[in-house]
Structures are given as structure tokens and as C-alpha cells.
Image (cartoon, rainbow, N blue to C red):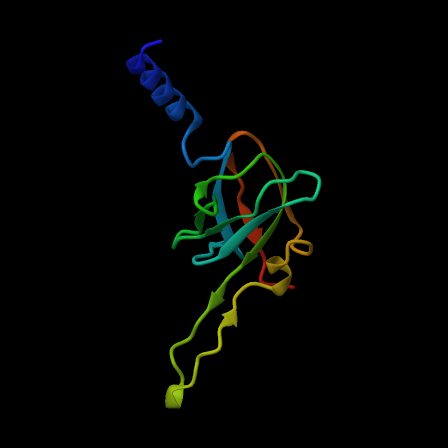
Length: 136
């Protein structure tokens, strides 16, 4: 095989494997009491049986999120526990005191083992929407 042909084959293989991408992408919407939840942090942690890496995301002003695993887009196929939390940081207090963040979501949602949320991620595009309640 000539060098030009070899380079062409390598280029095509690189396109097909998707440099920096994992086999599954995850996106969706986070709602709190029926309204979009902006600036919520969401993480998917693999169960011990499925392996994989932790993936993170943050919701936009409309509550939409997309997960990333470090420098890669997406995550590996498997079963995940999901944690979601959102805080509000008030303006600087009087006398320049550091503001204390206020948790907008019940604490249980911020713990993978207590949130009640799980996801079975399959190869390709996955969409998981989450509805949270402000009532404990």
C-alpha cells in the first residue's frame, strides 16, 4: 500500500471513530416544580457493575444540559446513578462579607445514592429529563 493510500485510510478511520468522543451522548432537561431549572449541576456516576467514568454537565437558562466526561464528549455505555443540585449565590453582603450560597434543590437530589434517579445509557444519543420537587 502506498503512503498516500495509508494516510487516506487513517483519515477515514479517524473520522469514523470520532476523536475525543465516547460511544454515547446524554442530554435532557432538568425541571424543578414544573419549571426549567437553570444553572443546575448534574452528574452521572457509573454503578460498580457497569464501569465507565463520571460525566458532568450544567443546565442552561432553559434547563437543558449535555454531559461530558473530562475532555471527551459523552460517556460510556452502562448504568448510572444521577445527582442534581442547584445553588443561588446572593450578592456580596454588607461590610463585604462573603455571600452564603443557598441550596435551591433538596439535598437528597445532590447525592447519587439518595436522589432516586438512575439512567441506563445505551450507545448513540440518549435523552433523560429529570423532574425535581422542592418538597422534601
